[in-house]
Image 1 (cartoon, rainbow, N blue to C red):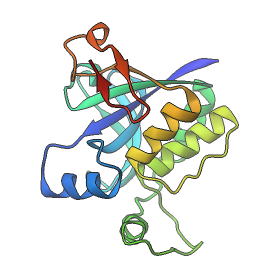
Image 2 (cartoon, rainbow, N blue to C red):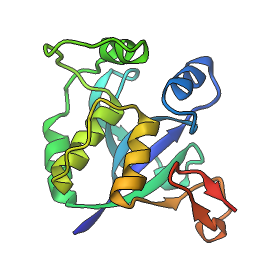
Image 3 (cartoon, rainbow, N blue to C red):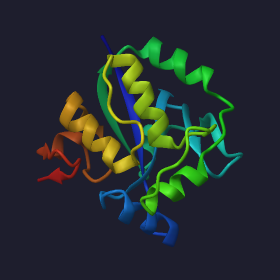
Image 4 (cartoon, helix red, strand yellow):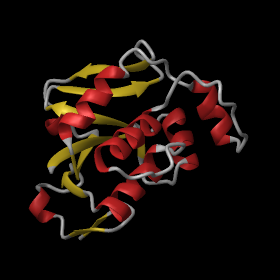
Length: 173
């Protein structure tokens, strides 16, 4: 079993970040991506060309806007599925309907970030978590159901200064 890294993005405090955080559990995360290398991730985003695509960074591990969580899973299976999904559109309509509590039809053609990564985790672990979830709910599942561990956070000076992470992903000191 390999380790899979999930990058969780902390919003910058803009109004859209606060709205997403409010509706998704108030943990501070508004987006998530699968880490391929420190310089390359894959995820679904509603901005920047919109949809499932590769994202490039100088080093995501050095970026204070991202926390990195590690979960057991078959990395090659995750990458195989993730790469096949490149080009899938972002489902903004589905996100908006989710926020206001309405059902959406089976004719959906797109995905949002945490829905996409929940399916990646399902395929790599053989589990069946609900994929219709938002970033903070997705993280709660990773921590509670899959034993995910926070391996890098800029909330702490170093990861060894973080005494404990609770099941909601918050740092206890």
